Image (tube, rainbow, N blue to C red; front, side, top):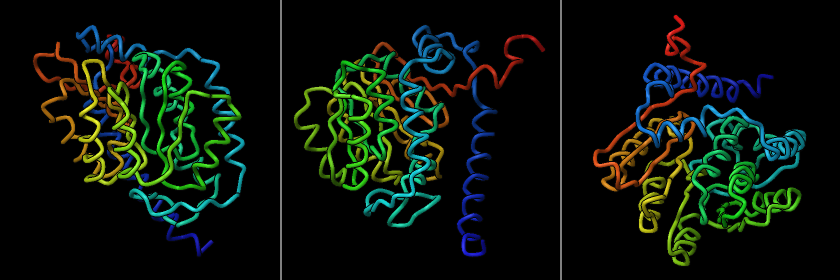
Length: 285
């Protein structure tokens, strides 16, 4: 018990910081009833408000439940910013599934976002055990999903999970993002959908964002994970929002969305929360 005390204290500190950031986000956030842009209203209705249950949700969550029981150790390597919760060089599959995989709510948002955008080419930086990859690939069954993972041991497990759920539209690349990402981009004429996760360092996040900009087009969307995970990620998010190519951004707390729609003559930003958190916006109170 005492041996785990420093880790428990650190975990509580991380959770407290995230809770405070969430409260600030919730205070600023608007609901679907405050949105006048048809595109953004449609996006929020589909990605945030839609509570329909799709078959893929049960499949992916059943897999997650199995992973949460596994005490198999995997070598993590030295890529990215590491875990705030467990920075050790080796972690159990259960630990990865609990702390590194996207939570179910975020996974469902990724699925709905992929379904809404209907991309043909997708890149994910940060496969981990493949939970987020499976949500994305399930939401866009006709898209080619290129997913990058730095740890060979973790990548091997992810491949097994893709086979178990029979998702054949996923191609996994092992190695440092700085090496594998340029190779993938070189072979793409356009990038429809980017999910940037797995490396939460400010400078690295910005570098990957800039590299992918060269393949964007009118309908591209960049999804940035954990934009409030740390002060560094918040700075990176604000810097991405301010880029001249970005015309529209949406803050969903766990995910930040960046769009490049030229029909938006003036840059716009929305901070959005589900209407359940602000029932007074309905005019009930």
